[in-house]
Length: 336
Image (cartoon, rainbow, N blue to C red; front, side, top):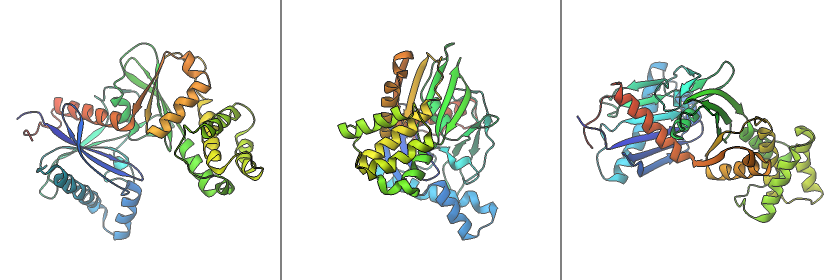
C-alpha cells in the first residue's frame, strides 16, 4: 500500500455542491464539478421521492456518484478507490447521514474532529470520510471547523481569532492549538432578507464592484452608521436614501452591507490584540477587511491574515484525511 496521490474534495453546503479532484501533496485542483444541488434541495428531492429512511444515504451517494463520473471525464482517468472527503451540511439533519456535533474545544490541526468512514461498496466505489460539525452549549457550525483547520494556526499562548464571513458568520477563539469559543452572526441571512424580501428590496440593487469609489464610500457610510443609533432605525434609512436620492440602488447595496457588517464587528472584543485570520469568499473577505480597517481593529491587533475559502477548505480536508490514515481509520489506497 502507498499514500494516495489524489483525493476528492466535497464541500456540500446548504445551497451549493462543489466537488474537486485534488492532487496530493500540493493540493492542485485537477478537475471541478459544481451544482445547485445543495443539501436543502437534495433533501427536498428525497422527501418528494417518498423513499424510506434506509435509502437516504444511497440517494445522496447517487448524486455524488454522478459528479464523480463527470470528474473522471474531465481528468480522463479512472477514479475508483479515490477517497472522498466531505465537509459542510452533508452531516446534518438535511444531509446524507446525520452525525453528532463534536463539543468544543477541538484541536486546530483536525486530529480530533468527529468523522465517520463509509467504506466503498459495489454501488459507490469510493471510501467516504464524512466530517461532522462542532457545538458549544448554545451554538453550532458545520463546514467552518474544517476551514479553520485549513488555516494552519500555530499553537501559541496568545489568543487568536478566526473570522469566517458568510450567511451565518463565525467568530472562533483559539488558544494553544485549541478552538475554545464560538459565536454565530446571521449577518448574511439578514442582508438577504432585508435586501430581497423586505420593503427595502426596491431600494437595493446587487452590485459586484466594491472598489468603485461611490460604492466604497457607501459601504464606509454604513459601517460608520453602525457605530451610533439603532439597527432597526438605520436599516430604514436604506429606503429613505433611495426616496430622497441620497444613494443609488447599487450604493444602497453596499450601505446595507456595511451597516450589518459593522454591527457584527461591534461585538469584536475590545481587549483583543492577538492575530486575526479572515477566511472566506473573495467579495465578502474584501468587505470585512475594509470594515476591520475602518473601525481601527486592524491597527490594534497583531495581524490580519486573509485566506481564500477554497484554500482553507482543501487544506482542512487534507489534514483530516491525513489523520484518518495515520490512525488507521482510513487505510491508504493504492497509488492512483
